[in-house]
Image (cartoon, rainbow, N blue to C red; front, side, top):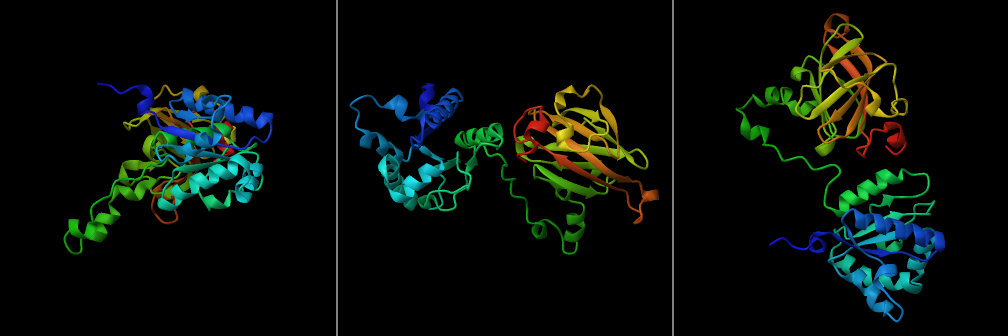
Length: 320
């Protein structure tokens, strides 16, 4: 028998201070959106009535079935540190459960109207979500939603075999040299230099849902072919003379109808993977063997993968 939807949904208690009406409305909007995205949010404006026992309601913050979203404005931090009002009471309720699981992640600080990025002392140096003015709200919201639903933004890769147990004596250095794991850059943005004639020209950027297998072949000095052949790639397009994420704009506007594209130094390749994430690859150098000072083929590229599956790369570049 299928369980009711609310029993399957993650539960979250929102702890916040009534700074002003605008802030209360902001919290209501956040909680409403989270509920529409499958998070069973408990909020005072919904779950209390005239005559309700507010102390009893706030004690739900201590229920370990709930994640606690601490909306950490500057005023919230002041009240929590001074143990004032409802915020102070909720702090006293939450703290014992934190002490029972020092390595836990039950309380999620959400920065809002907090220029100094201060957290209440009882949260220590907890990892937070940044929803402050000037930050990329959509990227922060997406990260929060992923965490509440138990989806890791950067999943931990599986544990491989011990190479010293898998190979005969003396073969391990050769096996490590030939290992495809050398050709992986899991960060969402970085710079890569590698010999594109190795590993069948393949290099993986990103990880998990945001992984892209790049496949290159030689096209002569200053240019490279890139393909949509790997199973995780849906489309590949050319962005001529585009050198930065801000220069891409809407990635979906570039033509992804071809299997292969020729990317010259100073151009970008725009890729879409099977999970509908986008990536921009900016080619800075291509040296075939005959032109390379080392006698080995070499290419250098920078890449950028937005945290949100949104074709507007420029809108998320500042939060990378």
